[in-house]
Image (tube, rainbow, N blue to C red; front, top):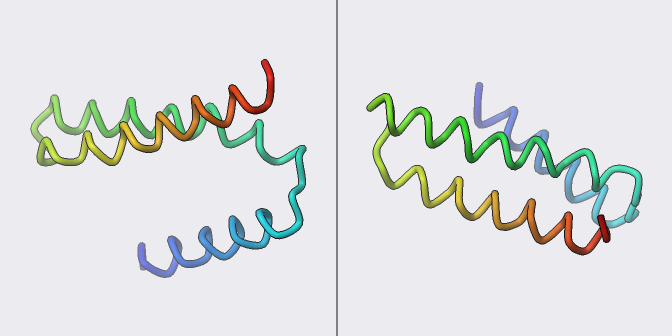
Amino acid sequence: MVGVLVLALAYYYVQAARKEPKEFFPFTVPVRAAVFVVFAAFVLLKLAPPTLIVFGVVDLAGAIWTQLLLGS
């Protein structure tokens, strides 16, 4: 079930990237930053392996990069 949800979200992101709806991009920044926080919490609570932090850091870096490119 999670795989289907991930595929659906991936489809949305690919279509958004093709159309470049600039209004959409700022909405992704806080959510992607929150992913890092949640992943870190899972690791600290020993609910997930420490390698999950790597994925969170990558997403956080992408969120910061997006925010910088948006100019605010």
